[in-house]
Length: 470
Ligand code: FAD
Image 1 (cartoon, helix red, strand yellow):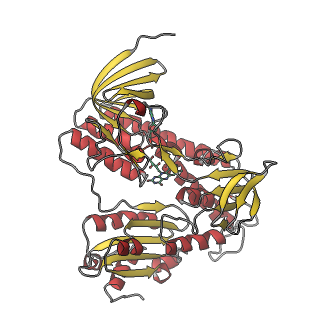
Image 2: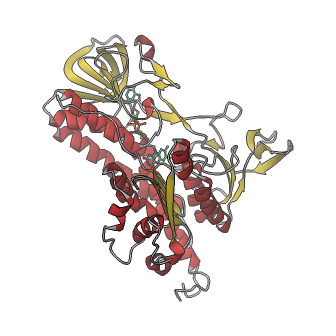
Image 3: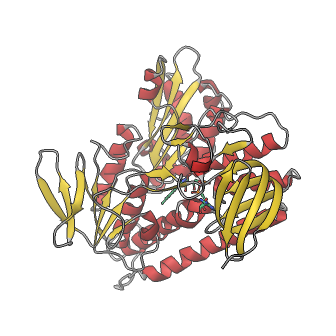
C-alpha cells in the first residue's frame, strides 16, 4: 500500500533514544529548540532496556538470593532459616526487572514530553544530511532537520562460528531467561560476561568462563583481575584463560573450546552466553547515503562531537570507546549546549568505568602501567580493605583502593578500587580527577567514618609517605 508521506521540519533531529540521544533531545528541547527524536524500539536504548539497568536488577536479585541461601547453613551472623530451604523463581525475578524497565521507559518518555520534544516511534533512515525517512506504524514520515544528532548505539558482536540462536545467546536473551540454566558457558571474560556469569552462579548455575586473553577483565590491570578471579573461584565459577571458543559440538550439547596447548575440550552447556564485545550500529539507518569519515570502525568525531559532515553530530557508542552510558549522556548534553549556542568541548579528565562483579571494580583515570607508559614518574598509594573498619564490619575485606599520582607535583592521575560496594566511590574518584586534585587535597579532605571511602584517604596518606592505619 502506498501511503502519502507525512512531512515535518525541525531544528534538531535525534536518531536513537538511548542515553545519548534522549539526553541530547531533552537538553535541546529545554533550550527552546524544536526537536524530533526517532526511536525504533523503546526509549532508553540498550542501557535502560537490555543493558545497565536490567543487568544491575538481576545482579541485585542474585545477591539477595545468595545471601538468603547462605542462611540455610551455619553462618557467622547466627541467622537461620529454621531448617527451611530457599528457591528462586526466575520468571518472577524477570517480571520485577521488566517492571523497573517499564517505569524508566515511561519516565524517559515523560521527560522528553516535558521538554517539548516530539517523539516518533519507527526506524529512521537518513536519505541525505538533512532528511530522514521514518517508517512507523502510521506510515512513512519525512523529517527535514537543520541539525542531526546520530545516536544509534551499538549491538552485541557475534562469533562467526557461533552465531546467536538456540542455546547461543547474547546479554539481551540472558536478561530475559525465565529458568536458571544448569550449565552456563560464558564466552568472554570482560565486564558484561563476568557480571552476568556471577549473577547466574549465585542463582545456582554451574558457570564456566572462557577467555581468549591471558587474564580476565583484559581492559583492567592484572592486580584488579586477580581479586575478581579469586572471588569467582570461591563462587564455584571455573575460568579458562587463553582459550578460544570454537563451535557447538556435533551433537549440540556443548561448546568446543581450543586450549593454549593446542588441545580441544567440549564444555557441556545448556546456554552459551557470548559476550565478546559490542560493535557500533552502522547499518539500517542510511549511513551509506552520508559521507561520514570513520575511525577504527566508529563514526569519527571531533571534540565538539561533530562528524565530517556539516551540521551532523554523533554521540555515544556509535562514536567509539569507552562504550558506556555516562559517556553517551555527557556527549548528548554537550551537543545540545553547542546547538543552543554555548561554547563547549568534550575533554573530560576521566570517564570512570565500573564492573558490577562481586567484588565490584572502579577505574578512573590512569592505572600505574598507563601512567608510566604516558611518560610520568609516579607515586602510588594502595590501601587494603582488610584494614578498613567498615569493610570488616560488612564482610567486605577483599580488595583495595589505589591512587596514582605524579611524583613531581602530586597531581592525581588515576584512582582504582576493587571491593564490595566500591561502585558508589566512582563519583568521588571522578570528582577528584576532574577538579585536578593533588594527593594533599585528598589527604586534607575529612572522609566520614566508618566508610569504605576512607580507603581513598588512606591511599593518599600512603602515597605521601605517611600511612595511618597501616
Ligand atoms: P544505545 O543505548 O544503544 O541506544 C541507541 C538507540 O538507537 C536504541 O534504542 C536503538 O533502538 C535506536 N536506533 C538505532 N538505529 C535506529 C534507527 N535507524 N531508527 C530509530 N532508532 C534507532 N554502560 C554503563 O555505563 N554502565 C553499565 O553498567 C553498563 N552495563 C551494560 C550491560 C549490558 C548487558 C550492556 C549490553 C551494556 C551495558 N552498558 C553499560 C553499555 C551501555 O548500555 C551503552 O554504553 C549505552 O546504552 C550507549 O548509549 P547510546 O545512546 O550510545 O546507544
